[in-house]
Length: 379
Image (cartoon, rainbow, N blue to C red):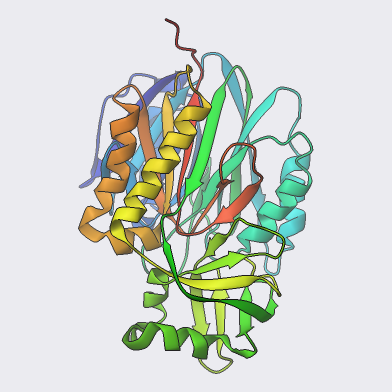
């Protein structure tokens, strides 16, 4: 595997183009303003004419050990020993996301399939239903990782690149075949507080009642003065969800509040009968979560080379860490060294198994890492 990495900032590209028409996979993460410019897309296509351009809008771009805004990160990949097949799926209003997820997996040839990487619409989607459908038709337990596109802290519109100009309401999929090694992990680092309560009324990703009380009223009680800053402050206080008969909990981010109906709308489903607790951030623990994610993913490919690390972290983490945000990326660089190219973005949702031998889930507020490599290390 050979890789170019370019950065577009201040109206120009920086970085060396060595692969040209050899590159098959062009991964692009950037601000909505830049990723939607057709002129920039055309420039990338000229640099890598035979590559499939796959990417999305972000809430911050990751390159090496740095996090930036209002840039575009282009990572061009030449696969020497493996192959990749791309596909695009459109989402319509009131799409059945579960069925879409099943269709994605059904469209892929299973022979020698090693990994599926997916980038999705970030707002007009039920990510947990999509992942549920993919999981249902993933009969060979192929690893699936990826994320939901972002729109900074605006939450107005997100965009996906599928080898054409950026569009909303679509999904792009890369399926990897042959001699390729991948690993993954998704970790949080948030602290729970308060008592564990029960979800008594919910429908899909809308939470109506907790312990028989209006969800928004109870949430505001916990937030205190921060309730005046809703819905923005909700990113700082996600919910921990633990389903009955499960020891493992997952995090759900609040995307919207309805003052009239007293409801909370989340990035993924909230099951009735599940246990929930409020969460808050500790910066050291968030950075430790990132470190744990790279340790787990690195250990999965022990003795094998990781040429590329794709980091998908949540916008909520970025808002909490503020000027320390580079540190959660820096721990990845520290552990992987200079031989691994790092690219990624801040998202509205992360898709990955929690760790090895677990099923794929939609996560919020995590650092999710995918390592990809072709060559084995000898000696």
